Image (tube, rainbow, N blue to C red):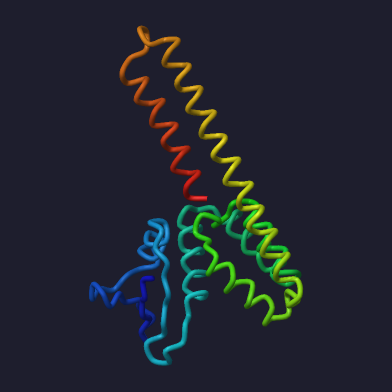
Length: 186
């Protein structure tokens, strides 16, 4: 996990590289698959959620997609005011962030739901089982899609091997590789 510090001047600092970083840098780290934690240098408090929220706004507004940003944030505010365990389950089912979940992280999230009163202690087992079952189904569906894509590619290459240029074959392989990469990330 990458630990960053925020100083009184509101600048973010990477102690490993001894450099000041921007919210765009934070977004790039996250897109690269890194987990981050941001600590206020004076108080020592974990301010990661605040920085992640600012990062989301900076990135989404930087893409000039205010409608999406407004919709997303409004929806999250509405949903977190209701049943957070149902929201988490829907996010996992939708594949949002599922590629970065592991048993330890899921257990921590579930435990915080119990502590906040969003999930009953006696529901933990069935809730966790449902999550893992749903994750397995999604993974299986993605695997099946990749296998179908590879089969189509193989058939296509066999049908037109003499008339297909090397560039067209390379493009098809890249498409399948991108789908495979996407399936690993979610």
